[in-house]
View: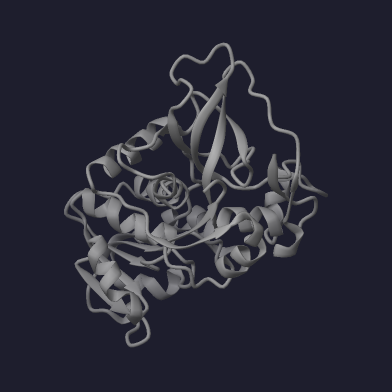
Length: 321
């Protein structure tokens, strides 16, 4: 089968399209023919190993799993003997940041893992980006205990995480203010943000509005800069480690130093979460934003674009037309 393989850490060029053996499902696994995947920050982070810590999960010297692609959508074409929930022909989507595999024509996935049936009427390409950015946003929302009626600011409202966070919070009845570039104001408003801040014209940290939570979905601000717009018991969260990896450290000490604090939760995802995302999608409350798509042959170009930090929503990788 065709697959995008990387045998060493490094720039986009280490990922190359080649032929490898098709995987064989274990007793509790599905064999899925992949139609669409995404190229995202998770894939980029594991490919480059820019943050050395990822090597403790993927291999200290060389990557253990040679095929990336943590998000996927495809069709069940085989299964192990203990599988009972799915059948051949089922259209499924899911997430796997342990073994990856979405950047190939076939992958295996555990039946009880973070996968679900594709919402009725959705295409493979529409369903493929329903987990990565969404589950990062959802993990942070749950960790902060955000409730209906609260006021939340999202810095980076157009990324895969930020655009998902707006929709998730809106479905919960939360008042959302989002920050984005002027060209994306209409898009962010359409996702459900009540107020949109154009960062090319206004510094959101100077607003005279106080928020229950500031969620920095692009990691370009800091707790220090955002404290002034947090309520007395307000929370700052970021998707990045921050300058000198300060955010995990601040998450440990700020609960002891004052009312305002930093949270830095480790994201998790379960089948229950994926089923919840599917439910929201079916209700019209969650629709991943898609920027552009690339065929497998242009994987290097796709990685380069994602790493510009300018993508709007998600970048698709077409595996099967």
